[in-house]
Length: 160
Image (tube, rainbow, N blue to C red):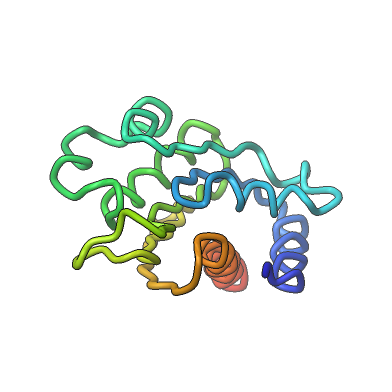
């Protein structure tokens, strides 16, 4: 379940600070963009969302290098980092947030099990990436990932 209080807090902070945001999502399939735009007035801060499910989409839409994908994989700190930079640059926003991971129930490995997720935030001053491991079914993993992305975003906004 999505943390509505967290979402409202993020929305208010973005509006108050006059910051713009774009999302680049893989395993969440656009759920974060959907959640963010469920708030009235979200057009004040939300610019766009890209669902880059395939490696080709990550390359074409977000400028993730083929080398990064081959060396580290689609689910990696390096790919999340590149996705966040890519969406920020392409959309000319203040904040780019990217998500890549394995929502399951298939696709997991010993090194990257189902529920393994990276979330990256690119801001004007730096790029931060966090690694998570969520449990549950596919929808629970996607929702938990979005809640974590909102919390990560709020953490940044509270420092600004």
